[in-house]
Length: 140
Image (cartoon, rainbow, N blue to C red; front, side):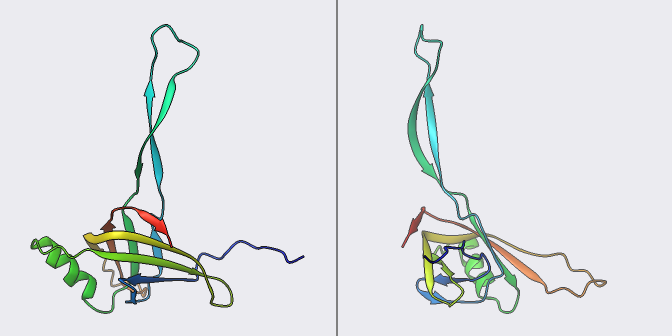
């Protein structure tokens, strides 16, 4: 019987509307959480009722070495009121390069752009970070 090892977190791709654009070194915020509403019933002190609420999704943050201006340009358009939403997909690959998981963040657009500190005494790659809001994550 073959052993099932966990997937490695460094084999991934990022696509925007099914097009790969840039190589990203980090993706943060792939998560979802259900809000829970509590209700306290009068005279009932042993427990509180808990009812399922709305799903929440944190913003996605993509990081990579700065090489071109396309993420800056997209975020600049948003800053000027020209919001273009895209489906942002994160694709996890196994050791052979085959796709094993795919997450889609629908209706994504960039709301924050930043770059790592400039430091003349460092020899590291300059990393840009872009934060995206979206309408939820689905597995595809």
